[in-house]
Image (tube, rainbow, N blue to C red; front, top):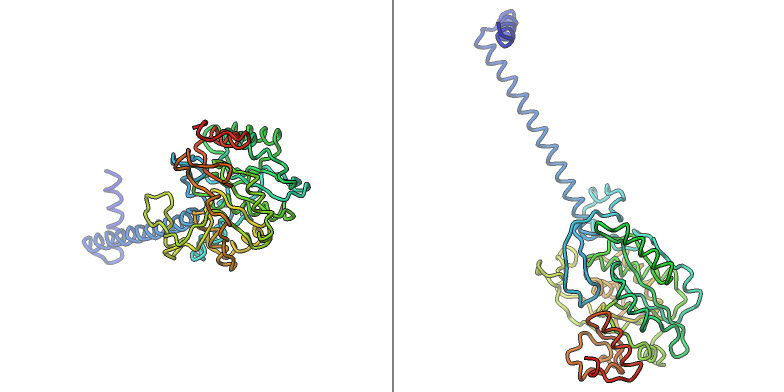
Length: 387
């Protein structure tokens, strides 16, 4: 006799002893199993719903921090080639996220605040020289050629019109399969030049706001005694003499001052395929407040601490210069129009009519062109000879 037959015989005998007919016993047995299966199915469905709901909230929190999809990129406005890849986030995501799940309204707050990060490579004593001006250059870890071009040109000028100047490069974490080797190279470069600052955020285009806030934090905590600072991209030519003339002018404020190429009445980009896309959730207003284009802006050195404090209350979004402008609006500070706005140039439209001896900043097409621009001004060579 089979095991099934034996079991069914035992079930029938049990139910007969309880006063049930075989048919009624069979129906009760089927009903019991149906209820059990329904209970298990509902339990599993509830568990799956809770799991995926929590996972979605956690992913929502990570969107600004790194997005789990970061980019290999060329730092600066002129960087065009963006290659998406998946990377693990070794930053503030390691911190507990329980409060994010219980308070979803604040999922984006404080992610860009520099207290979420720490410095891996640092030059904390650099400002013992009491510089008048500190130049902070955000640059991708792999862009050694750009750093060397700056080191050999405007970044090598330590005294301008009798005022001490200092240049530092800010990088994030290296990525890719050879990240360990790349990190070792950065550390060796740091030992050689003593001009690298590195923080533990993933270095990507999407994280430029974090990068800028880390710069502000370094200036506020490591170099508060400087008079002025400048955030200048690694693809920029900078005429130091013209910049110093601006800063030493008697009508240039020493507090609450920031200037460069002003961006007025700019629409927020809502096109999701644009690299400048910002969602309504991150920034609900249709236009940005007046801000200074991020390729190069100079500011009085009282502002970094104020901007860092404002960032505790201003929700971060991924357009770094517009975010700084939003923090300034929160502080009640308006960017200043440069005495000669043409000195802060973007792309060079016509090299033959572009007088480098008069500009403060302009975008170069390559590290080689940064050197060419600098040499043309230093040797008074017309730019047309170099084009």
